[in-house]
Length: 366
Image 1 (tube, rainbow, N blue to C red):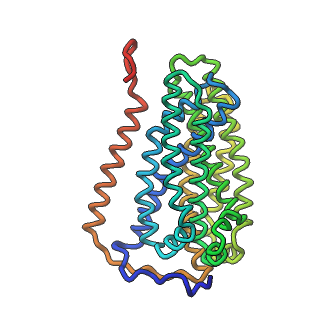
Image 2 (image 1 turned 60 degrees about the vertical axis):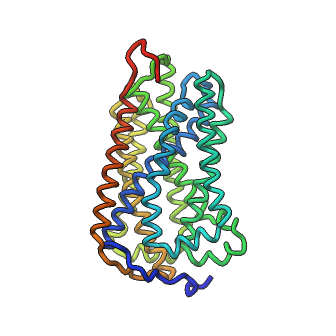
C-alpha cells in the first residue's frame, strides 16, 4: 500500500502539549506492562510447573491466585495507554486493527475465556483437585492475545506491509520481525515471573509448604529467569537484524544520545544476567533476588522508552511522520491526572494489603 494512502492526520488537535501526552503514554504503558508480564509470565510458569513439580511447590496455585486480580488490573491499566496511542497515532493504529478485524475482535473473547479458565483453576485448586488443563488453556489463550497485540503493533509501525496483509491477514503473523518481537515479549514475561516467584518465596514463605519444596520453588523461578534472559539477549540481536534497514540506518545516524537507550538496555541485560547467576540459591542470597528484580524494572523502563523512540523512526522511515497539532486543555489534563493518581494510589494500597494481610492463627481464611 503506497504511503500516500495512509489516512490523513485528524483535524482535531491533541488536547495537550505533545511532550506531556507522550510522557503520560510512557508512564501508563509501563504500569500496564507490569501486570501484563505478571499475567502472561505467571500463566506460563504455572503451566511449566505442572510438568516438572506436580503440586508440591504450589507454583500454579500461586500464580492462579495472583492472576485473579492481576488480569483485571492489566486490562484496566491498559485503557489509558491505548487511548494515548489512538490520540497520537490513531491513523496508523486504527488502520492496523482494521486490517485484522475478526482477529482483533476475537482477542476480546480469548481474554474472557482465559479469565474464566483462571477461575476454574482457582476453584479446582481450592477443592484439592488438579487443574493443569485449565492452567495451560489460560496460558495458551494469553499467548494468543499477546501475538495479536504484537501483530497490530507491528502493522501500525510499517504502512508498507498493509497491502499484503489486506489480502492475507495471516501474513501479519509470518514476518520475521513479528516472531522476534513476540518472543521478546514472552521471554520478558517469563523473566519477570521467575524473579517474582523467587522473591515471593524468599519474602513470604507459604505456611504448610515444606522448606525443601520452598527452596526448590525459589530456585526453579531463578533458573527459568536465567535461561529466559540468555534467550532474551540472543533474541535482542535477532530483533535488531529483523528491523528494516532504513530504520536502522536512520537510528544510527541520530547521534550518540539517540543510541544511548540501546547501550543502556544491553548493559542492564548483562547486569541482570550477573545477578541471576549469583542468586541461583535464592534462600542463601535473598538480596540478590531483590537486586535482580530492580535490574529487571530498570531494563523495562529503558525498553519502554526505546520502543517509543523507534516508533517515530519507523514512521519517519516510511515518510509518514507528520508534526502533531496540539491545543492545551489543562482542565481536562488536571482532571485526568487527579483521577489517575487516585486510582493508582488505591491500586497500590489494595495490592500491598492483599500481600501483607493474613488471618491470625486459627482464623479461617475468608
